Image (tube, rainbow, N blue to C red; front, side, top):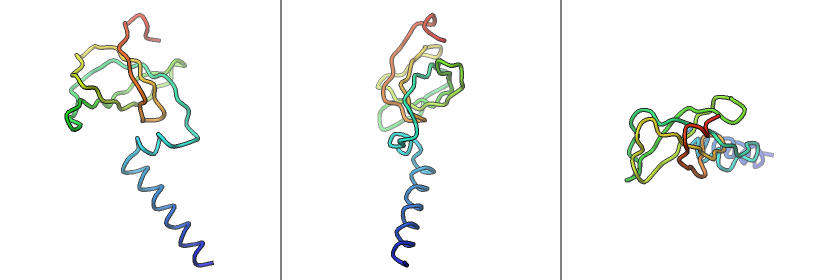
Amino acid sequence: MKKIISVCLVLVIVIASLYFFSRETFDRFNPLLTEEYVFVEVQGEPTDDDGRYKYDLEGVNEGGETKRVVFSASTRLDPGTFVRVLAKGRYSKQYELINESEMP
C-alpha cells in the first residue's frame, strides 16, 4: 500500500512540475487538448530563445475564442505581421505568415 501511495505522489509531483515549469511541454503531450489554428498579429518585442526569437502572443482561433500561443522564429518578425499558428494549448507545432485578409 505504501508503494502505491509513493508512486502516486511521485506522479502528481512530476505532472505538477511539468505543468507549472514547462507549460508548453505539458500541453504538447496532453491527450485532452486538440490542435487548432490560432491567428495572431505580431506586437511587441520577442525574447531571446537560444538564438531564436520567441513570441508569446494572444490571438483568436477560427471560432473567435481568444487563445495564447508561444512560438519561435529564426528571424525577427516585423510588428504588424500576421501569423497562423498550429497550436495545442500553448505548444506550437508550426506557423506560417499570412495576409490580413486570411485573419478570421
